[in-house]
Image (cartoon, rainbow, N blue to C red; front, side, top):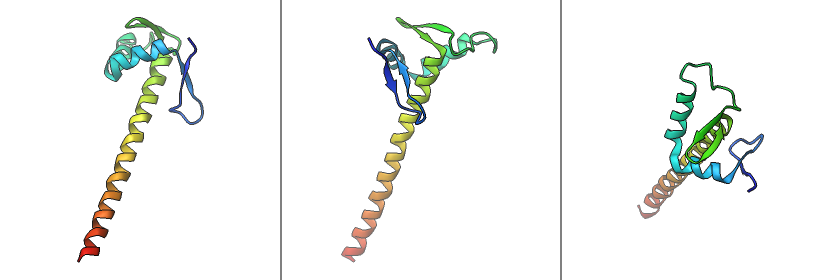
Length: 102
């Protein structure tokens, strides 16, 4: 299968294989972070982006996990911004409706 391009970073997109992406999505952010912490428990070994990690049913590099975590964070931040803008607009429209009916 061909890699899927994650577009969290505006400068470049990271390519992740679909089976790797499926495993990361299946296990979630907390599991991915704990795996990264467990691999480099001494703070030195396993910190290279090319370190191969067995994650579920897929072999994933540390760099792929880090890139996915960054992409996932940017996606969540986007929806927080959208929600904040929607809340502000709702408050403005509610205020304008109050002015119109008074």
